[in-house]
Length: 488
Figure 1 (cartoon, one colour):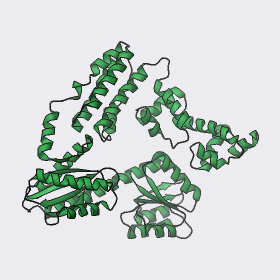
Figure 2 (spheres, one colour):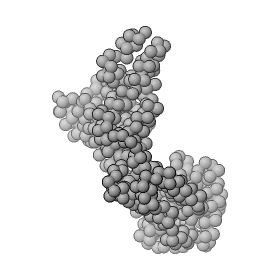
Figure 3 (tube, helix red, strand yellow):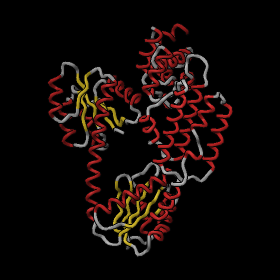
């Protein structure tokens, strides 16, 4: 996620870029919008941003000087400059002063997205290299310690800056100062190195007490403990193995402190169970091909009830691979019989399920995917069911900050595929249809004389009243104010 500052002496430009970012890049955060370079430098003293998007021409200080000062004072902050077609010399100077790239006014949303995504990728790679360097230095520092043990801690959800202090307080209360060597943050985890005569199993019991104390402070944590061996590479292997154990705990929503011996028992247990023991795409496909939707629905509910009520321990990689295979097998089985399910790409499925944090979330995703295939096969008429579902969703959620990805996710489709299919069946784009619905609802609100145009804009999902007026005029050939006059 990028944190950004926007700088331009024209308020409409700031609002326009902010609107584009809110619509197409909801994960990016605009920390500040200012109308002068001096104000930007003042605010940057107190906040950290990844990128500043600034106009190249401003009255008090131009973008050339602002770029120079930002790159000198805050070298980790990138600068993207805005310019007109006749400002090439200004652009050249800003690039010379360290600007990352430039955008020509008026800015097309795709140009903004392309630059920011490329910039974000560069920042991620830069941070990874820095983290790897720090991590390597840390492992080398403790490579020759004897009788060393490691505990790796992961905090679920939001982590504030005070967690490390709370963790160290718990270690002190548990008489760990005499035993622990170091407690640091490594790659989004917290690592405790300690020397103790107790075996790992006994240490695990002590750490469980720390876990419960931290839970009372509002921190839900996962813990993994292992013996370390001498050598930088061995220490790194121990850390990686502890992270693997924590991923296992999180995926299965387990609250224990895990050590190597326990983990190996779980791994051996997983070898005897497979998702296919509880679910068969072949059986599901048979019900679909025979048109027996009642049996199909009963089969799904029965199997998911069995899965949700058993104490399942799953290997995340294995379960995710099996889930994708089941969906693809079902789709190909139906296609072999002349039916056309909504086929996703293998890469799309993998990308989506890799974001699912738990086995429960993964099973819910699989059930929804199958039900979506069923729904779109069991439909009469030329228009797929998912188009009707999306129309209904827009009718009830038009006032929210909707975008193509948000809506396509509700019907489990890739945004690009959904966009092309929506245009195919509706003869207008998704954005055009959304605007039509919002304008239709706005007309109803505008009939109420006590409502202002900006209030109506917010009520139908527009954050910018000026942009709302533009859209309204494009649809109705008159402004919202003129429409309000005609019905008053």
